[in-house]
Length: 107
Image (cartoon, rainbow, N blue to C red):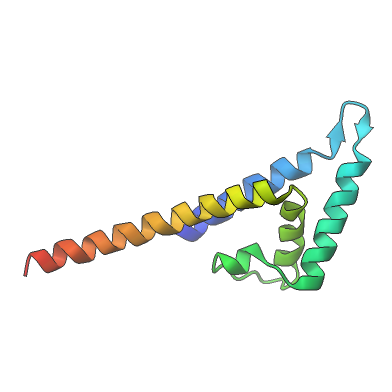
């Protein structure tokens, strides 16, 4: 279930990123340029947010390419999305540890 939440979180962030291409005057060339640069850097370095979340994609380079789009939003955005992903992980961890604690207390 946590992987579904992670994918939903990343998908929404990607959609919001892609919407930035359109500007009132037409197409935002600066945004396209920074997106291409982010994708290039992520592909060259092999950075993959999906892999970090434990999600395996059927197309190996796609995770890095999509991560590059998110990287183009900047460090604050990446920090925020990683924080959100961490909250999902922690809530799962807390939920499973509280189950373990309560089952031990019944013994």
